[in-house]
Image (cartoon, rainbow, N blue to C red; front, side, top):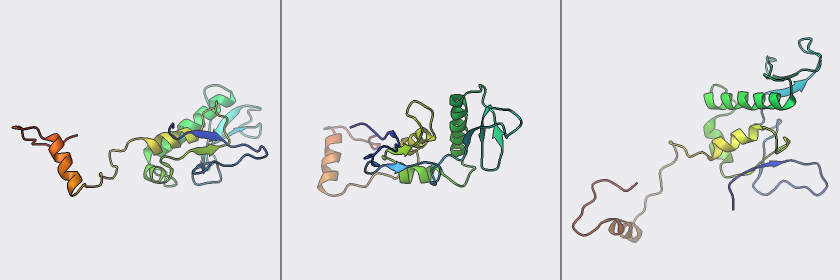
Length: 159
């Protein structure tokens, strides 16, 4: 079985959210707060693609394409999550609630999506992860004996 993946949400009859999958679209706490838009109502640029955050700040992609705007929105989201300056979503929260789970979003699977950022953060090995559960009794003795060789003493725990 493969690891967690991104699934595209659908409006097709009979489609169901898979078990243990989490919807990470915009109305949820996991949603990307950078919106991709195309409108002539902003900045007098008719038909141009741009990204806007919740405060109304507009960001313009290098190319005037929807894909470029989506990529910029994902990069801005990734930067916000990595910096930890935005209190809406922390890396610890992402790891604790999304680790090992499939994520569902409306974005096409061939396009950039913030769910990919969430998957990467949720499933990355953390330096601050919880320590392994200690082993006691017979299992601990067997583990120690398997590591020791006759006439040789270990000074450091195995890695």
